[in-house]
Image 1 (cartoon, one colour):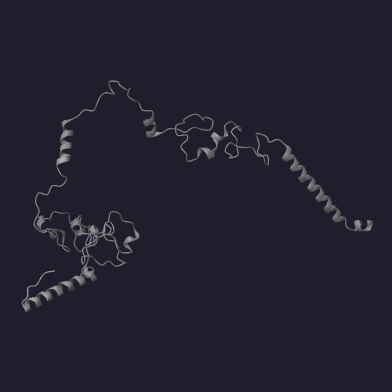
Image 2 (cartoon, rainbow, N blue to C red):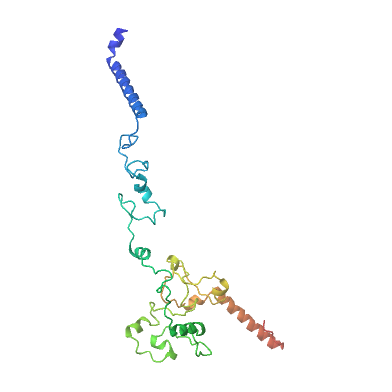
Length: 280
């Protein structure tokens, strides 16, 4: 047995190191378990307990909860009326319009200045009467048939009834020429004409507000059958969107044209036979 122990000195040394390491761990555990926790340090590693630590207690370093960054940065409104009671850690400052609204001078209730009313001018009564009786728009006269502008012509020839427009700036005339694609759209343009809403895939890539939708409500915003325009998915957005002739050649328009031809043919057949044609 003595020869076996002497032949393995390294094994004995490892056992001695293991025993000493186990003894150190046991002693450290007992020290941490039975030693009192200091108010100045944390429970582990002896690190000082700062005020912003979420483990801080109200008795640690004064009032740690009031100074905690977690408490001060919350989204609650518990401290909106508290100003100046935390001078040690910094206090909120009331600023700008809130200062004027909170600390403005107020009139004493029942005093002479508080009982004064604003001066009433006769103009106020006239404006109220005008607002109630006079409409915003007053139509003086209008033609029996609406006057339509001429498209794809120079600006001076677009409105024949408007008089001479030759004094308009030459730069504006070039910009508003009927062949210029960057000309502005009419103010009261038809929804199925120059003022149509974005309908193609490329036009809807950007959100454009203020345009009518066929779903809100459909009986008011939807165009009549056969008066809609054809819009390709690749068409880009333009200021002036006057439809071309090929855009008006839709399936509904062809169907309406066929129905009118059939009615005319039926009327001719009735007249040829001698019967009176009833309009359906």
